[in-house]
Length: 170
Image 1 (cartoon, helix red, strand yellow):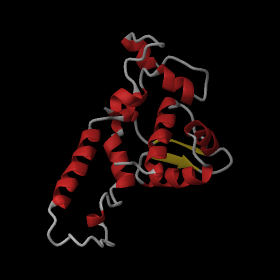
Image 2 (image 1 turned 90 degrees about the vertical axis):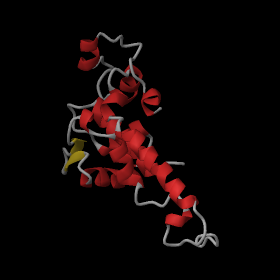
Image 3 (image 1 turned 45 degrees about the vertical axis):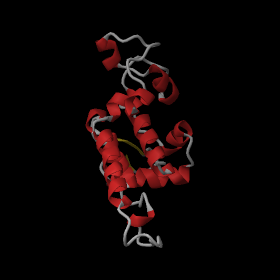
């Protein structure tokens, strides 16, 4: 299974917003931080806004920020918003040309597997990906690298995060 570029950019953008919770994030800054084109990111920002993950502000001093706390944003919900309408296999496509379609039972098994993938991500929240992750904060922070208040309260050491993006997704 491979995630689309849009889904990948969406999660990176949300992580960027979560690392900068007190800032109105500009598209230009996000594009640089998440290594995406501004044009592609504009589509992602629009979808994130439509789905209620971020709030946007137009104009010269515009930008966007999380619409709710990072602990209320499920990675599974984000992935579904961007991926669910896309067919994982040809069987689920309106353009199914598979000659086995009338007799193949693999479709139901793959559908269950994809559902299990999303369900596993429902229990992963944006906050888990960014909190106490000093490496991520250093990469994505608009300000100087800082130890988040949550990390400081939990007694975590800035150089040794208690959670990591890769660990949170596994």
